[in-house]
Length: 393
Image (tube, rainbow, N blue to C red; front, side, top):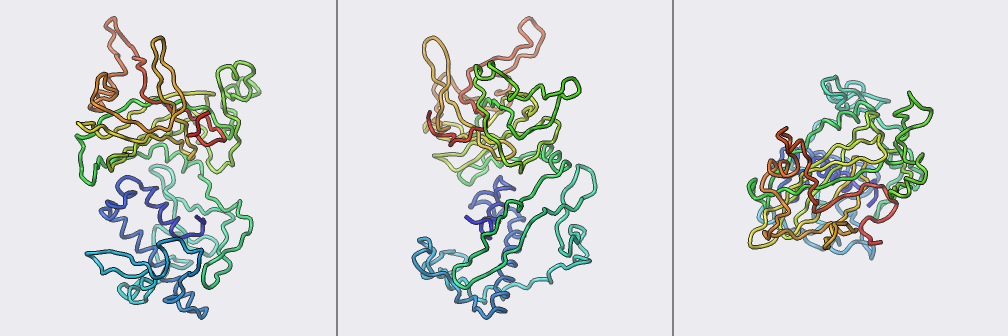
């Protein structure tokens, strides 16, 4: 979908906040839902006013023809029962729904309505960024953003001008603040809060340094970056370094070396999601970590879940599943879809605490400190290949 689609930007807010706000059946429970939808309805309201100013009747200006997606034709009905009687898509364009609410005037420069959360930049009121933790908000505006220059009747179109500069870049302070941002899971299963119905998997993450991390982290002792895998010779090929992709630098490192990798479970035979992150060292050629991710507790019915992983720049990691034989344990590329049962030996722990203690023995009692290198049920390899990660090789 086009970056100029209002639906794309609406969905992005739901997905960014995540948790129950990203699910259709639970997002209205969050008060932010009403602020968000009020804002987008206000944008729709202003758009319709602009149409009238151009001589277009917004109540009748509905796309028609063979290019309209199935189910979105003007005569198709939307059913909001019992809150609202079924109405057609065209009827939803009626002005009577706009008259239900009234909006305050749009904030304008130089005062921006007196809001402490807005600041006037280049004649436009923009939001202040969060800024560093404990510090004052700072104003950040992306360079190169251009407005839509043309609106046509019927199916809307935009200029196809080069928009490579139309992107937001993290400042150094903003990138640091994302590291201390926590994540709260909802523990919802099939619409019910069920914190005791989750079990935990130990997931291993192997992270290869991406090409776009080009800081000389160790430049005080040598002229070139000691950790950069591109400086490796034969040994790099032997160990299987795969990173050959150069990414457009839309995601800047924090220069400390720390970065996040998120691992997420989505139920296939239940409605529920769990997401957690681990911290890896972006300086090193290769680093690894283990993270605990929950799925629904299997009962007489097995649990089917899809596991996925991605780094803080959105780059997808490849899942690798175990292949056990008599002599050794190895992994092969897989889809990341799992069926988890109650059969022994269990591949999960009944609590986060149990998942941690299954890995570590820290007492100095002759048995520790010890890391129990247990065969992980799944490993994610974040090697930034320029290929679809779920395609077997």
